[in-house]
Length: 308
Image (cartoon, rainbow, N blue to C red; front, top):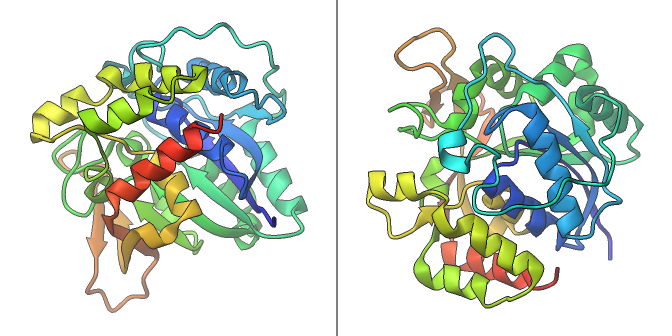
C-alpha cells in the first residue's frame, strides 16, 4: 500500500489526543513526526501529552518535537477550562519514557520538508505559530507542502469570542502568515465540527471497544466539550481535531467551497475572526468545509480505534 507522508502539528488537548490515535491507526498515513505548540495548555504539557499518547498507542518510533511556547505577538491564552489543567482531563497516564527530540519543531519542519522527495501533507490541530515561523524563516517550504488541512476558524461565529475560534484567536498573526502563503489549504472550522457530535450512543460505541485505547478515549470524552454542548444546545459535544485527520483520509465525507479567507489582526472586538468571502473577485486562498457526513466520521473513528 502506498502511504501519504504527513506531519501533524498539535497542542494536546483532548481532541488532539483522539486525532493522534486516529492517525496512528491509519496505515494509509506515513507519519513523519509530531510537532507541538502552546495552545490548549502550555508547551511543556503539549509535548508531554503527545508523547504520552504515542506510548499509549505503542507508537514510540514517531519522534515528537517541541516548538513555540507562545504566539508571535500576543501573550498565550490557553483552554485549560475545556481540556483540564493537564490538557488530558479525565485520564492519568504515566510520565512518558520516550525522549523529546532535542531539535526545535520549527527547525524540524523546515529540514524535513526541504529534504522530502515527495510533497508532504501537513495537519494542524492547534494555533499556527510553528508553521508560520517556519514559513517566515524558509518561505520556500511552501512548495514542498502538498496540502495543509487545519482545524480552525468559522464562517460566521466563534467559540472563544462571538466571532473567533480558539486556534485562530490564540495566534491570529500566525494565521495571517499561513493563509497568505499560497499553500493549498483546507479549513475545517466550527461550521463542520459542531456537526460532529459525541452523542451518548456514539460514546457508548467507543466504550464498547474495551481496550486500553478505547477506555482512554472514553474517559477523555466523558466531560470534554460539555461547555459547548450546553452553550449551543447540542445533542452531544463537538469533536474538532479528529475531523482534520478524517478529511486527510476521506475528503469525500466533507462538502467544501472555495473562498477567500482573511484574518482579523487589529480589532479588539473581532480579533482572530476568519472573514470568509465566497463572492470575492480575488482568487480563493482556501477550501472551506461547510458540510460533513458525521455518522461516517464516527464510524471511521470507532473502526480505527478498534485496531489499536
